[in-house]
Every structure is written in C-alpha cells, then in structure tokens.
Image (tube, rainbow over all chains, first blue to last red; front, side):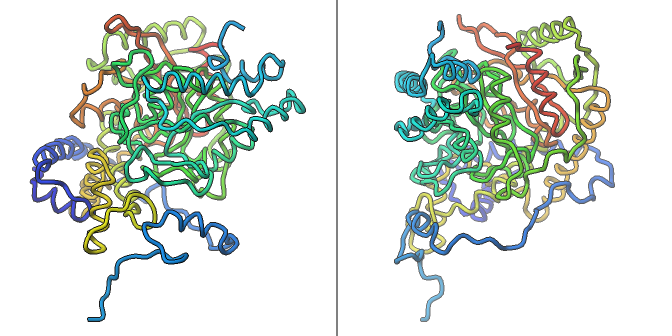
Amino acid sequence: MVTTEDVKKLAALSRITIDDGELGAFTSEFDAIVAYVGQLEALDVPADLATKKPSLRNVMREDGEPYAPGAFTEKVAAQFSAREGDALAVKQIITHE
Amino acid sequence: MSKKPNELTIIEAARALRAGELTVRALWDACVAAAEAKNPALFAYLEIFPADEAAIAEAQKRIDEEGERAPLLCGIPLAIKDNILIEGKIASAASRMLENYTATYDATVISKLKEAGALFVGRTNMDEFAMGSSTEHSAFGATKNPHDTKRVPGGSSGGSAAAVAAHLCIAALGTDTGGSIRQPAALCGLVGMKPTYGAVSRSGAIAMGSSLDQIGPLAKTAQDAQILFDAIRGKDPLDSTTIPDGLYPAHEVPKTLRIGVPRHLLGESLTAEVRAAFDTTLEKLSAAGHALLDVELPTSGHALAAYYVIMPAEVSTNLARLDGIRYGRFAEGDTLLDDYLHSRTEGFGPETRRRILLGTFVLSSGYIDAYYRKADAARGVLRDEYAKAFEKVDVIAFPTTLAPAFTFGEKSDPISMYLEDIFTVTANLTGMPALSVPMGTAARGGKELPLGIHFTAPHQAEAVLFAAARAVLPA
C-alpha cells in the first residue's frame, strides 16, 4: 500500500512538488499502478536469466573529434535561464559567511 | 488526376513531380492549405512552418535535373513529431517545460530527410514527452481523430497520425516507445512502423525510454512507410546504440509467409469487431496462400507490467536533466533547489510527473530487485519466447488494439489508458521491428472507425515485415 507520505518522499527525490489538493488522487492512482506492476512477483523467471547481465548496456567511446571552439556557444547560451556573457549564471550554492 | 495533390501517396506524388504534372510548389501549397484549413478543428499541428522557399526551389531543380535519379522523397511535404529536433525550430515534446526551446541542431533523421530533399510542413502534437495513448496528455490540447472528431487519434504520435490521415501532409515521422506509432496508425487507418531497436538513429530525438525508443514512419501505404524507413535508417556515429547491417541473421522475404498467431492472447477483452476483422484478414491471407500457424508466447501477459517498470525507470532518469537551468522552463525560487522544484513542477504535466515518481520508486533501494530486475528478466524471457516462435514462423500477428478509437475522457484512470498498449509494448521490450496495417473498420455512432492488424518480425527483418503489410494492403 502506497501512502501519501511515500508519494511526498518520492516527489522530493524527483525534485517535483505534488500539491496537497492533488495528493489524495495521485496516491490512489499511484497505488493502483504499483499493484498492477506487482503481478511480476508471480512470474517465474529462470534463475540464470534473473542474474545474467542485461543484453543492453551503455556503450562508451573515447573523447575526440571536438567541434571548433565556439561553434555552438551562442545557440546554446541563448537557451540559458540567466547568462553572464557566455557563462551560465546560477544561484550561489556555497556561501563564505 | 482525380486525387488532390495533398491526398497523394509518396509514390504517386514522386511520379507526378517527375512527369511534370505537379510542381513542388503546388504540392507544398496543397498540403499547407489543407493543414491551415483543417488544423483549427483537428489540432494535428502545434505549428505550421512558413514555406522554406530555398528548399522548395532546390527540390524542384533537383527533380528537373536528376529526374528518376532524384530521391523519392525529394519535394515531398512531411510532418514531424514535436520531439524530433529541426535546427532553428521549437521542439517542445508538447510540454510546458520545453515550450520555448529552440533546437540547436538537426536530428540525424532530419539531416537525412533534408539531404533527400524532403520538406517539413510543421511539428505535430503528441502526448507530453510521448507519454500517453491519446494525445490528451499534450500540454497544449488534444488532437482529434479525422475519422470522428469526438474520438482520440491515439498516441503518443497522434498529431502525426491525424496529419497523414486528414491529408495535411504526405507522410510523417513519429516515435514509438511502447506503441506510440502503431496504435495511432491503427486508430487513424494508416501504416505505422517501429523499426528494430538501433535501426534508426535517435540523435536529436527527445529521449523517453532509451532502451525502448525508436523513430519510425506513419504513412498511407506499406510502400510509403518503407520508403521513409529506408531514408532514415542506418548506423550513426552520433548514436552509439545504432546497429550495422547484418548484425542479426538475415531473413529472405519468402513468396508466401508463415504467419504465427498467438490465439491464447485473443481473450475476451477484444471487442467483437476487432476479433471479426482479425479473423477475416487472416482468412484472406490464408486464401492467398500464406500459412497460419499457432504460436505460444506464454509470458506476453506480463509484458505490460514489465514495460511499466522499465519505461518509467528510464523516464525518471532521462527527464532528470530538465531542471530549468540550462534550457527549458525556468521558474525562480529562493534557493537553487527551489529553482529546480518550481521549474519541474510548473513544467511537467500530471502524467509526466506520475511516471517520474513511478520510475523513482522502482529504482529505489529495497524495490529495485522486486521490480526493475524482475522486469528486466521478464524482458529476457519474452525475447527468448519470440526467438523460439520465429524458428517456425516469419511474422507474428495479432490485433494492434483491443478496440477502435475511444472518446475523449473515456480512459481517465491511468491503467485503462496503459492497457491501450497491451499488444504493442512487447516489440519495444524485445527490440524487434513491428508495424500496424489497416484491417477493416468498426461502426460507432454512424462513423466507420479504422482498425489495425499488427505484425512483429525478427530483428532486422523489416523487409519481411513490409511484405506482410503489402499482403494485407496491396498497392
């Protein structure tokens, strides 16, 4: 059973706010979905399959072939919420007080 | 010519352009005029683009100079789902979060279509971040089904499907994470195809579930869908999940198909008309010399549950990048954390928030084994079951959906909406190519609503899949 407290916790972890007004409906819908996917518990999967490496894995490559410096700067910077020159401006995180 | 230019297929339009019966400009104007006339009622497009005069002139010049050697898509007006990036155009994924986001580069599929000389009519409506089966989750309003405007077009690529079905373009691109091309194709009477995982580059597609997403065509015929697929497919250095030709065993296209039918999946939840249309279509295929064989896919009943663990897990991860700081909606708070919270809460609609939370839940410590790892194991079992079935059949057939298009608001509780994808999600979990082809209609309230038959083929056997589509829907 998923509670409103669980949903609030998950929301905080997800960096999202769920208003008190929608919390009740949201929790009951969420609970129904969790119950639905819970049917997987009844599924027997071969032990070797349950522990084997997933067939899809992240593929990495070496860094290289960079774009010319500045090629996308203006386009990318134009999307910033706040900018100082070509830099992205954000709120101070660490204070010196 | 009895059809209007915008009603032509890709093949018909390409022939008319080469024969000089039609100019690129006239074809563009016909599509845009239809789009502007009908979009207020259908809301297939979020934005209709101004004419790109240079591209129109270049396409005409190429057809005049190269004739038959010009690509078939040269001068063909297409619609593009709003989660595929076109440089300089807004790509919002139908979300308030990206309402004002302008793409800084072309998706690889867009570069390929531009090289082929294709034109873009506009960006089409969808469920927010491709999460939904009706377009009702679009932040900007729902698209209507051209066959009955009281009903949904399906989703999430519902805008692309409605645009093609109403002849507001010649063909379109969509994306498919759990059925988002095939289900709207079925509900709008089109051919819609999800390629093999890795067949088409996702560079420049706004990610939803990265182990599931593929870009694919929505078209009026199987031939058109194949032309579009051939134009966008191929390995891409910008997407390391793309695969080379010949990665999987080759499958020749047989003269007659061995069609596997998992009869145990066709339970009581199928509506009578869908069942009747499916049986009639199979009888016709059998009469044409194709063989029908029973296949068993016992884990299919768990596919939707596995999908609703894996997909939200990937959604919560992919959408974590959207915090309002570097791009997208920014809602300022007192602290940096408040900036994130406000931007994400204002930016995401209810279904998106629901899936982000669900993903956070199934990945959290204490639940990851019970949900995520179990779902991943189920995915492996499904893949093995399909591989075994494909030892004796060329394709596997079932209906695309349980019922024809539903009315707005009819599926307001999330699980009833999720069940729309019960047949389509498995192909995303296994990575196999699949498509939906029209198979008759069901009457509702005096309207004839399209139905679709769904085929799955082994990995990289798209040619076999298109052969099955042509068997149902001859040119």
